[in-house]
Each structure stands twice: as structure tokens, then as C-alpha cells.
Image 1 (spheres, rainbow, N blue to C red):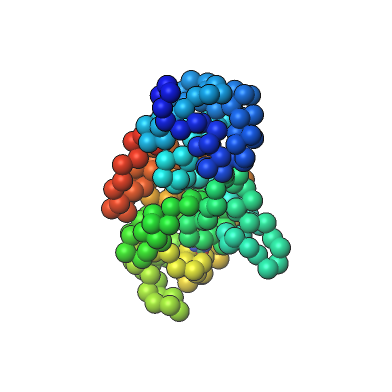
Image 2 (image 1 turned 90 degrees about the horizontal axis):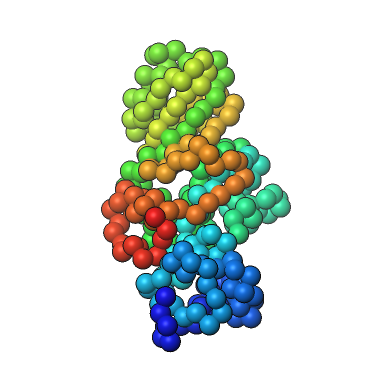
Length: 248
Ligand code: URA
């Protein structure tokens, strides 16, 4: 913490979207703000590029303003910001202090992990077909696909928008498949399974590249840790110095 220099904490927090300076003073007064792990006090000043500031235990996006959430989407929630039919949006699950958006899409009926951020560069790289980022799904399908049907899935199946790339496919138990793809076509896993004659009954995304979290319950979310953001950036070939901005 910097004494006598740096910016007033309430000013930095207000800029990061936590409300007016007065609201931020109240947050500080209530002991809900920490600087480098210690409870902050009114009058504290910080250097946003050096100090790690958390509000209610969560990292405040005070440096370059980027923020990253891993969300476990339940069924019935759309991944667009606005739905003309008024169905709930994934963005309603995340209480971000700044404007954020989902990275890529999951069907309304699909559950599981989706990233929500305001980092447009990372989002672009993650969703670009050349990113090659793996996405892992658990698919409960009708019936029990034969070894030959699984082989077809692995080798690629013909869909109306072209043949799918080779995928990793394993049978977890009767009618339950683990499928890893690195393309991101519309309803791809459902269409792949339909193509081998086994409609999907339930679909859950369990991993995005290096990100997974079996403890994240449907409907809940959490911020990514520093090492998770770094691993994600490594996975898409993006390097960035985030050492002083994220919790380890
Ligand atoms: N594949 C699908 O079929 N649906 C999703 O939501 C994601 C991948």
C-alpha cells in the first residue's frame, strides 16, 4: 500500500464500476475491501498497477479493466445478451461490475461451462476456428452406440455444413459419451450424435481448453484465477503480463 501517493481507493473502485465514490467509501468502511490481502481503510491510496484489490473476496478489475468469469449454465438460459422471447440470459447470472459478454454459445438446452468476460481479444481468439481450443462434453444419448458408431464419430461424420474434424470420443457407460471437439459449429455435438443415429438427451460442457470445475454448481459462477487466465491465454497463443492484477 502506498502512503501519501497513488490514487484514493474509492476513486479507483468507482472507476471499476462499484458505484459512486460515496458508495465505494461505504464499501471500504464496511471492511469489504482488501488491499494485498489486508482490510482497507478510508484514506488508503493505491497504485492500481501494483496493488491487488478485492471486494467481498473477489478481485476488482482495477488495472486494465479485464475480468473473467467461469459460469455453469443451467438449461433454459440463453447465451445471448438479449432474448426476444424474454428467456433468462447468462448475463443475469453474473454480477459483474462492468459490462461483460459470453464467449461463444451454448444451446438453450445445453448445460455446463461458459466463459463470460469483457476481454474482446481473448474472446476473439477463443472463438476463432483456428484457435483449436478443445471443448469437452458429456452427452447422454438415446440407446448405446456400437464401437463402429463411436469410430465414425472419432473419424468425422458428414453434416450438412461439411465433414466434422476428428474428435476424441469415449464411452463412459451405457448411453453416456465423453466427446472432445475443437470446432465450434452450431449444435455440433447434437448433430454429430444424430448423424450416427443416437439423439442427444442431455448435453453438458465439462471443459473449455484448460478450464474445468466439477465443484461449480449449475447457475453459479466464479472469477478465474491468475493461473487460469494465463493458461487460457497460453492455449490461444496470447501473452500478457497479468501478474499484478489477478489472485493466484
Ligand atoms: N454442441 C451442441 O450441440 N450444442 C452446444 O450447446 C454445444 C456444442
